[in-house]
Amino acid sequence: MQPVAIVTEIISPYRIPVLNELSRLLDDRLEVFFINESEGRRDWPIYRDEIRFHYQVLGGVQLTVPLRGDFQPFYLAPPLLLHLARRGFRAVLVGGWNHLECYWALAYSKLWQRRFVLWSETPLLQVHRTRRPVRTALKRAVVGAADAYVVPGPSAARYLECLGAASDKIHLAPNAVDVAFWSQRPSGAGRRQERPLLLFVGRLVHGKGPDIAISAFSQSKLAERATLVVAGEGPERLALEKISGNRISFVGNQSREELRRLYHSADILLLPSRSDVWGLVLNEAAAAGVAAIASDAVGAAVDLIQDGENGLIVGAGKVDAFRAALDRLADDTGLMRQLGVAARKISSSHTPEACAAGLAAALG
Image (cartoon, rainbow, N blue to C red; front, side):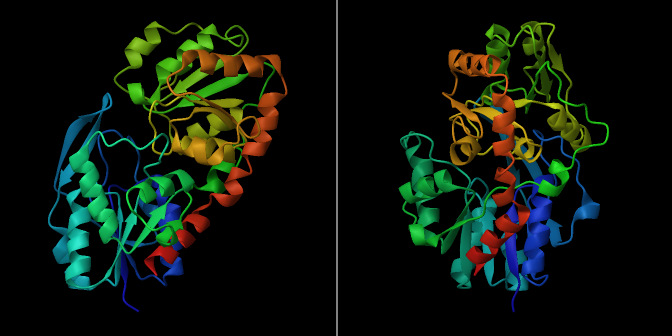
């Protein structure tokens, strides 16, 4: 059987278990092309000793463009077409349409009559708006040319359907983290105490909403009897520290081992993003038995949270709504634990094995 290829941006730690499992399912006939090893927004180590699949890094020049108060990388890498043609892959799966590599892969699939699969995570969170007609037209063209699609959840499937994708060609590959790692309680993790520990994990940029978490916490009934830990770095850290009180602690970027320790010591995760395609911190926290208060602009929240059962959902950008959710937890002392127990069940369906199975089905 001929090999298959996956083309994606960078070596993301959370994808390694998925690609390892996919390689096993495909009898080691998988080649992954990473456009680059890493990018400026991510301070992720590369766990090469955990990689069990074949891969190449295209390399080249990395550039950036502004995006929602942050920046979006794009790359000028050596042409992918030659790599694909040389191996004669029977199918190519491409992660997103933001990079030239998507169009090289599409050209290969048409010239050599091979299967082209689009892996799209963009969720449909509100009524679809075409504020960028040229970009939308380009997306529609790629969607129309694809033979199959992969999505992490129902909201992303709805987005593709709005762009013309046939529902029977959409395969679910649920976004997953290494459940075995994140669910394992560290021996030195602090036990949850009477004083609740609230946790924010993410880049300190406008889009992630750390200012919303801090303002809502500071105004809530929990402000005098709980602690908020902010884990992450970003250009807004100094400004955020200036508006934070004594019960708010900034700990910067954490190793995955230290972050796991924080999850297992926390009572609730705050995920107030103004815009977030998915939000894998929700998966990580759920594996540790921690539920989230998340905005309705977070793809994972829309797909995974049943409001009031395994987490709480609030309107994006609404400090008062976020504060009200915190007050609800303050008034019901057992609610955080109840939500956390229910949230842990997310890990049973969102595993690397389930994600790999969805990818394999799409590749055919």
